[in-house]
Image (cartoon, rainbow, N blue to C red; front, side, top):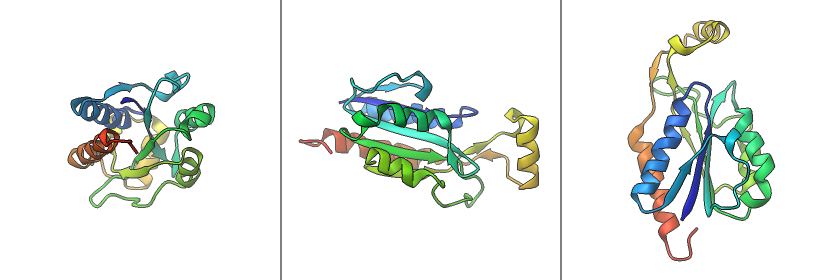
Length: 166
């Protein structure tokens, strides 16, 4: 299967999740293309799509939502998996889906949505972001669970390989 993996990422951590998903899909015999959502013109050449976004203030980033808007006609016709990245801490907070994820899921008939913990490196943040994280007492660190991400990507690869597909 030819699979597009794309994720809107503000500081690169969510893009790294997309890259990991793409690697796993390739390891399982699929052709994966990992492309930033703002670089995707159409999805006509893909058999399936994995779309993700970093979550800020409870919302997906604009590039991911715009990709869905411009390719929705094709996305409803093929398998689509979605993921959000953003909760931080141990345990990760917030632990609920982003505010707008229900709209995203219904727009593409998502096969599954996963919420992955994120990464906060305060050194990469701008002044306003640092002020917000300080006010919220947000913990610095990488909270991504690479085993869970790999397991999810492996499950997608298996589902795509089943006769008849998803």
